Image (cartoon, rainbow, N blue to C red; front, side, top):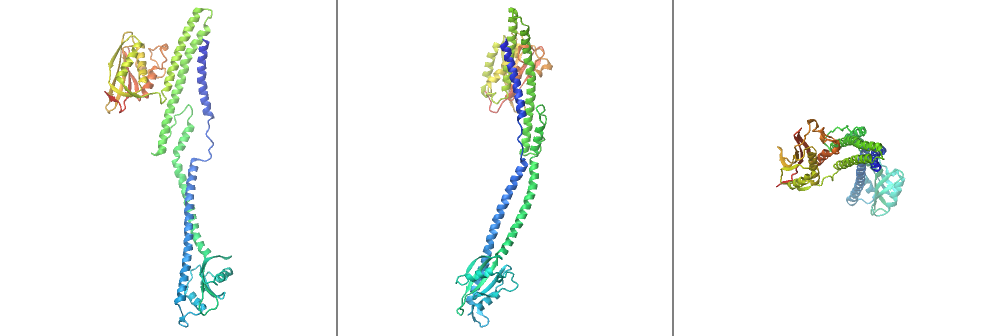
Length: 509
């Protein structure tokens, strides 16, 4: 007796420990410290992407414009050189009306006919000295830059045109030196033309600065717009967080308001459905703990009371106490087995569905039911069809209904079994099973309560079962997508029905 009592106490302690561990786990599990909000991370990522795009576009545009600037300056210098060459070959000295004989005269006429651009300058070198300079209206004064003059002298002694970039303390030039050699000249002369490259580049850089300013302004506007848009998009997440914070172990009634029809709205609906299932599961768990505690407390109290009052020196009292304890422990074992079955009904592998010939299955159920009691067992109606269902669970539910029919009917009374395919007005089909008896029936106020966990009618006997039989039948029906219901008349008998909706793959013979 002591061993069985200790087993019961161990089971109760295990259940209590499980609940305590669950509570401790929930208490110890804390959300990680948040460093960056989703809004900030999304906005940062967007701004980095936009910034990189603007930098890449600006850099490419700057490089292209700088390359075009170089090409434009070189093209202008080369065009002027070609005009100077044409003047050298075909030009006429206006004083003699003959071909040019002296480079000094050619350079004078060439500079008179050349109009420099605002950032362009020119001069003429004769015998390594500056002979002619640009008009006073020209802003770029090459003669005022000694370093540039020295460079021009160093390259003008050759017979080849020199085009290059010159860096001085004053500025940077893009210049060309055209050597001039006429038959009457004994000294080197040169025509020098140059652009103030730094001044030209400043104009190009100014465009880039304007682009940068506009890009920065666009980024600020985009950041503000993105902040508002992302905040609006994440509003369901914030509502979800607020609702989750308001949910406690004892209150999961809060729901999130659904707005819009996007993915966040679908997420909100999914979370609300999850909360509905969680609410139902917690309610069922609380009810189960209350019911199990109540149901287990009674047999433990009975066993403990008889053992404490038992006279160990009285063999008859010992035997009587033993029988009572064994009977109570047997009922506790039945209760635990039924609870395990109900717990498994929430698992995805509770059903093993396969095509079954329901007519043959009904015959098998009838053969097994005959051993439950001396009754007039009959088949009211048999349908010949192949249906997808779990034959083991269906047999379990039907035999439970048969056992109830035997329990509440007189010996040699009639019990009928049957199944039939029912078609509704909407075109749907349902496989209906039933067990009917001519027993005591069920009072009207008990019709709903008998399917509850540990629910019993007023005419039931506590020690005759665990009180979970019809609840198991209901779980089997619901996992098949159907339901269980009863039609009863008190004092005349009852008929229990199990409805299983059929899929389109089911075939009627």
